[in-house]
Image (cartoon, rainbow, N blue to C red):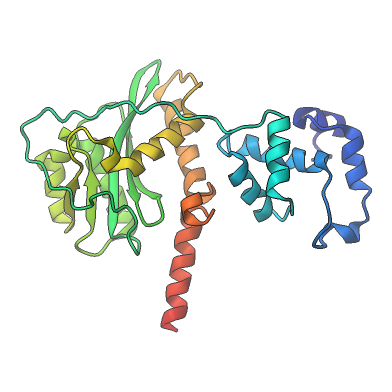
Length: 289
């Protein structure tokens, strides 16, 4: 970084003093990798600010602490919490849930096969899906996503200027082509007309999937997707103004790549969805060896 920007500029952006940086730089190199070597508050704060910027303000102190440890920065959780509090570094809060489902239709509705049991024992057994919308100056952009509930990984998605049945079918098609799940997978959704449509239900039958739907007007029956929407909009939509649908599309795609590859989940032992799934497959290979 020093080859690109003067130290004074970098320290100014990260809001740490240049003297603190040089004090850290002068430490004996042999201490840097030793267990118990203490980083100065200035150095830890610089790392915290850098991570906070990279994750777009999503992490509170528990995830921040885990991220620091993953990067080899040995620091106590209480110290991280105090530094973040002292310097006003906090996670961006999610907005309240808004109902967008159009369930006022006469189409057949599938039973709830999940009953809020959102923790399958292996991948490609239970997927869930939903639709959300993003405002742009060109009009609405609609996003349909398919999430594998084993690892909370987004395995399929579609972004379109409409919310017809083709939107959710395209997201499901992407998920199927990428994952090729075994027959009998349960796909859980709300009672929206897109998911109840013959076009979507026929696609589920063609790919040997079982349809499951939440109860009427109960968002908690599809809580994982609601939680996902909250994270996505907090990180990449709220507070941003998109002139075009393409700008919104790029913002969403960038965040979903971060979410799948790098975002730490407390429910996954502070691993990203892809890390969690990779470790599971590695464990299965070891068992079979």
